[in-house]
Length: 178
Ligand code: SF4
Image (cartoon, rainbow, N blue to C red; front, side, top):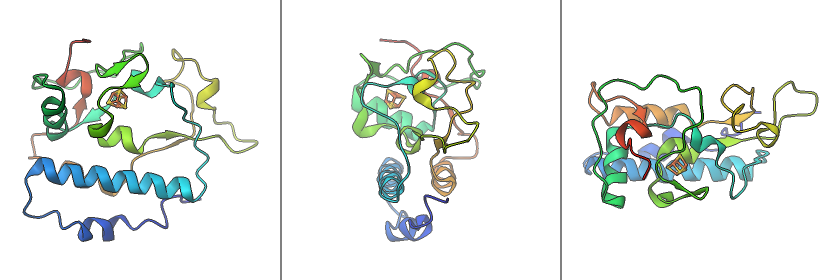
């Protein structure tokens, strides 16, 4: 089942007319489209099992762009770093620097990856694992059933950055945990 089939990303991207605005505004529009794509997927029956207070996915890699880091910096007043090299995929859970008591403190300006990523209940008989049944330590390697941000939005987000600015982990931009 393609749960994004009824949401026309390309039409949305054209409708929002992303040309001309400053980069942070364009990224904000992409975030809004991502929210609408997620709402559409849920309305179409995506069996989302995420619940308030769960933050397992906030403990592993969260790729963001430099503009998304700038938006977080402006919102929080925290200075962002410039990542010198991509972080190796980490094995142990490390909380996102913006996670406080299992709550996202930057929810209105959270990055694209946080808006389009949901754990789904695996179909009966599937060998995929429910996120709820995976421990935090096992989360990274568990074969979860997940909904990811639409690839067209990921491409559009990266397309707004220069060739040298690719994704880096949120902790590379904001290394200190409070
Ligand atoms: S920005 Fe918010 S939603 Fe995204 S990983 Fe950090 S705490 Fe979680």
